Length: 206
Image 1 (cartoon, rainbow, N blue to C red):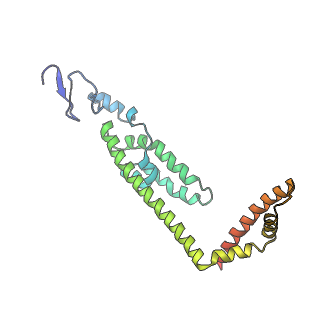
Image 2: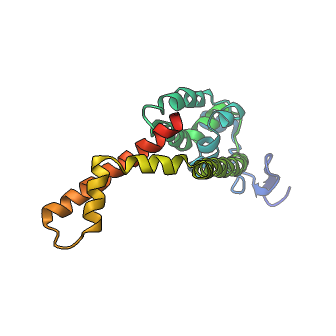
Image 3: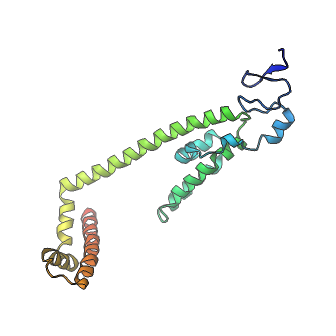
């Protein structure tokens, strides 16, 4: 190679003979510098990892990041603290690139980003599919309830409670309502909504 140039051993592009880092693929060419910096995540890789967020432990196996198995106990505890699973997934997304860079053999920022982009695309597709499946299951259950008359029976039972009867009485006679009546109406509406929900659940349990 003439004019003080050489080929980058990682991407093959032409670079200066004295270059210590390739300006194209961002790889360090000085072996000692590479070893010293291999555990430090490059600035261009500091971003949210959607693959780790959506795929959690599956992404963890592929990137040798087994801390992501914490999602399993987090999912169990989510029965008591619903937001816990989401919080752990967000933590994986924030720390994902840092963990993957340290736990795998990447020393090239461009190749690393391309790999994580594939994980992100795959994870996003899986996340959308699971969301659609959940929505479909909820709609199916709702349609089954409506067609079976369980929801109607639960509603009818709830409307016989004291709260719902008072709510209907105020609702059907809105004239000359005082401020106290309006406040009472709001409270009765909430209480009646709870009674309807409980009525449906009780009929489901029968």
